[in-house]
Image 1 (cartoon, rainbow, N blue to C red):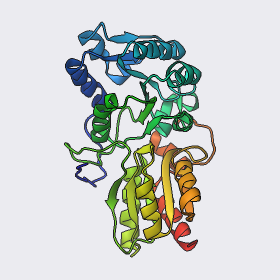
Image 2: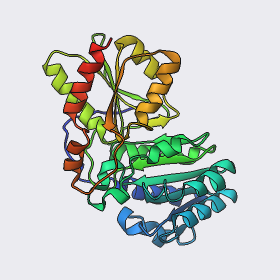
Image 3: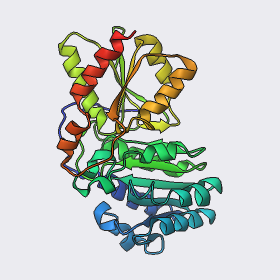
Length: 324
């Protein structure tokens, strides 16, 4: 693992989807066993280039995710390395049984991609807002669940996925605008958390992923200005969770706050709480969507509405630290 932290809270001029599309295009050129299946969203995700460049390995399943999942599983059964994409709500809820039975239960690896993670579905509204998608994949035995935070991390993760040959993988990501957290060339290891800030004075650890990593860094800055030192970890892999790093942070700081663009009842916070309860009971506060349905609106409104802001993390840190 090698990374550079940008920390400027500025949007990346590149669309996040291109981290996936351009990387897959390069990977498919190098590896003829890689295939891609989409559900009428190649234009949205900028993967039309795959259909053009590799017509015998990039397939359009149409608005039929269950069928697309079956095709993906069938390709995997022939030894292909398969990527399957739809909007996050459709690559989870709409085809869950097909992914579970035809791929996971059958012992086949399919790399499922869910774009427009959480509130980033924005104006597509509640019907398209995946607030439980990762939780569904956490429930599949032997699965890998990922929530990269920016263009650079998504590119790094995508390159590693073909190396996973056991279990279904699920990568949720933002399709368009993202804050650039990491410098180009940064590399990450699936299954390992990234320590962004740490000291021996930390009174709490903030564990975040996806769009909440930048909010956690903003919270760190605010708390530093108030004389409160906290640890910040980017836990972009929800499963397998980096339990060693989590337990070390719990031991050294004594309090945990999780921050996720997901329902807190079944996501990153739940995975962290499960590990802590079994190994080292620790005060924990949960920042995320509090068991609510999605709705229509700009992302900025939705982040305010659901309490996905640095201010919510700051409040949670103070509450968790006071419980020690």
